[in-house]
Length: 345
Ligand SMILES: NC(=O)c1ccc[n+]([C@@H]2O[C@H](COP(=O)([O-])OP(=O)(O)OC[C@H]3O[C@@H](n4cnc5c(N)ncnc54)[C@H](O)[C@@H]3O)[C@@H](O)[C@H]2O)c1
Image 1 (cartoon, helix red, strand yellow):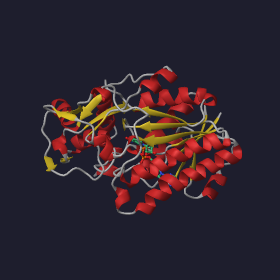
Image 2 (cartoon, rainbow, N blue to C red):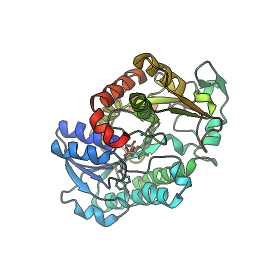
Image 3 (cartoon, rainbow, N blue to C red):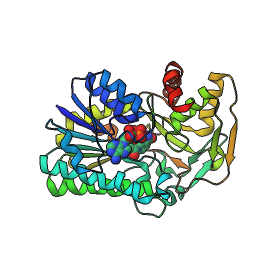
Image 4 (cartoon, rainbow, N blue to C red):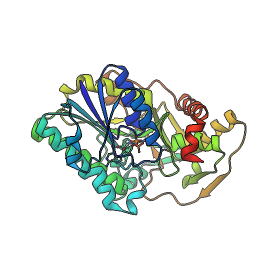
């Protein structure tokens, strides 16, 4: 089977490329290499025999550089930061929405199956933050029994504070559903929450879960932006993501635009303070912490995915805890310090 992974050198794309190649798929990784660090991941991919195509999914012509007939597209390419879009909304619009229409058009014309990387940011900040919550020692939690298992797919996508990123991803998410229905295409839309793992070139503005251990390795200061560092996420480790996507590829003929909330779920949550505390114990020092009292625009204080639908549909569940995931990222950062120096020094 020929699999095209857009954003194939990014965090998710790189790990999926390596994983699926090992499982015997013919993998083509397409990337415009816009994210710092992914050019290093690209070299590793090519060493392992993954075909690389330098292309930009905003340009439909770039897909003609792919010579093989594609069976499925895993569309991971995006501008994934929720803050960049306020500086240049059109950049998010073209990268996260127009590009997805290009992918869908390609799928429609060539009967290609698609798995789309959507996000919890399709649910607006004002609606999520409107849920009653309680403050505990190191974290906030939902305090409404309706959300004991987290946010499920029936949660409203209306609201005013999605972020520009969230809004462009929501538009793409809805387009995927509409195309699947209108043109009888096999499409799965995964609304992922916080994802973490090795080969995520984490930055303060995006990818906090790997930024934390990287910052510890470099003794960089950390920053709590709003909620005193008690904001809470469910965390899903990259190996669990790869295993789920494999199951989805194997059964995609049964799906036509189905949406899934995907994350670590209620059993795998961590706040910023808890991440700091965990790493302090492992590394034996306290980092410098800066406090910004006001949360980032459209940020969600607590977000935990209700993963019942995805677990039961695919007979899958997350196996790796946030602590074990953090250990793995820390080991990766320490082991590959020379390589990371090229990005972080
Ligand atoms: N990382 C998370 O916690 C998280 C959470 C929810 C959803 N997501 C979604 O998952 C997907 C993958 O995220 P990631 O963490 O791997 O991000 P990433 O930035 O590590 O990877 C994205 C890759 O896409 C490439 N890219 C960007 N624009 C492109 C374009 N126009 N054409 C071709 N390539 C382009 C980048 O160079 C990069 O290699 C994104 O769609 C993101 O919105 C991520």
